[in-house]
Length: 550
Image (cartoon, rainbow, N blue to C red):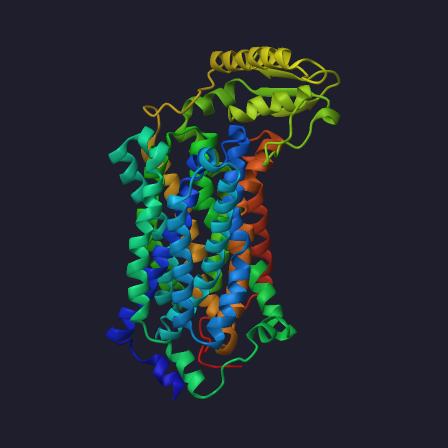
């Protein structure tokens, strides 16, 4: 009886195989997240033809490119995984990921080969995204199909730790390299070392994956001749299954994704970009919080075997909706108290005619802001200053505390005049900000390190609540014959599109509205949608028989 086989304890051999698949997945996430952790340096190396702000946003877009193609990887490799097996699909994904990462480490920069450098870089990110699209669904399916009945949440939670452990490993390698080489050498050429190290991880991963066995559920189904001949058609061409795919996306993975990326990536970007905390210190704070928080993946995975997957995931999304604004404000107060005090004491206001204010998102660096409103906002955005907008006719003005600084328009005047006016305006704004207590960067002596780590740990625990039980839940939603394909697509649309685009979207919202906290509206709205739809329409799955194939 199949179900009896599922109820038995796991053998040492099966435990070894699950450990091996988790380890390979850690390495794959390490490769993928190196890029995110080094986004600021990559912006300077590969997008140096643009201004600093646009280069960083463009680097984030290249980061997001890897996420955008993940659903396509899910379709390609999910189909292969359901037709030929989990094990061989694993081998292909790890090879594509490892080689793409290694090539980034030897890729010439913009200074060497011009525009070809960012084009090749984005191409490599797309390959990484395709590989990851095939990796996660296979790993989660593979582990769940080995796990004893009643312990799927616990066992798949180990796969859930791999993304965070991969991020942690990438931060540790970066910090180690930075410390040994020093900041100047690291920014110049040392950033390549973490990418080059990945070739060793690739060799270990391939060796591990060659020693793995096929999952028992897939092997049994293949022996009975019941594998799917057309997993894409069965997964997405039949409303019975497509309906579950759509609900899994909007009622589970979209909310899980934005909480995941807010807690681990947006928090890091917020510390370094908005709060001007030293990059190495910010990485240490995040790494410590990950170290403290990661065991909770296992805690919530095991708990989901007892009380259900759904209540834990919904609670994590709801807490995010209710607490993000006060939590990120508390993070500002702890990480850059001078900035927080200045924001409370000396408000910054932009008085401008809305008709001459354009959208501040300029990823290509080709837009030249010429109106007094745009110039004023660009200078404030470059200084990470939050401001409020007030409608007023005539040329724009900035009020910082009691001081008012008139902006200028560069339209119709010579390049030399523009240069002189720009220097004068920026100097006046910088002086006014300094007088009113706005720091150029965070004073590391004043950072409340304990509170920063406590806040970041809270954000990671929310991540573990939404992410710990979700692999088991996605596996349990779909039948064996089309499981790899069906669960991979909503997972990677949720995490690739809703999650991966979060940093870029949030920074664009901040640049447009002027408030450094307004980027949080994006994860709050998406997580709120998931709470409502998931609560109303997603069924609990912890007692599902995953060996059933209909």
